[in-house]
Length: 275
Image (cartoon, rainbow, N blue to C red; front, side):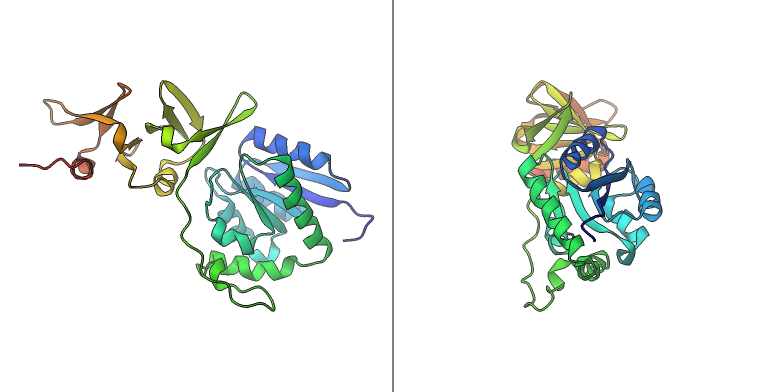
């Protein structure tokens, strides 16, 4: 990329505040042109193909098509330099570490953004993006980043499985609050959103229950219903109605339904033996 031409950047994130934050940070960088933004996977695919940006900040978790779905559809060979953005600690970062230019874990500070952006600009200027595309293709095909060795270097050791969530970032009233997972008593579905219950407070995030279930430590949490996940040590009572329906009462006093197909697993997990 010549010194005269600005770095063309596309911002993709389904959260408006997250897009605005990235745009604001990018506007403070010299020789940068924000060519567009996208709020979902379909819009991202169209924008990448039409605008041909040099760099894209790509949210991993989006409703509908995820960030990885975008890469699959566009194709690694046609993808610009990519900085993945995720709200979850260690979410697929073991793979992205060598397949992407960089990654940002929300909430990230200005210094961490600056580090990722500088690295991305340098790789674009040195035309080193091509060597990442083969690694990204390997990740999408299931080989994983652990199987892709850096050019001219020894094969990396296989990384440990990603850690379970320890905290979740929640955007509220223009601010980002970090909620420790250890303080969550339950998570319930609310349309396309999930509701984190922390004491008598509730926090809304846009995430699928399936993704949350996979990222929470199964030793501490259990899914009791398609719309509810609870922390085991927060269960006070198992309830059974005359009609045969089940529920739980948490130590907070909240009551949640338990699916009939999940009651035996719940009883086993809390050490209740049937006689």
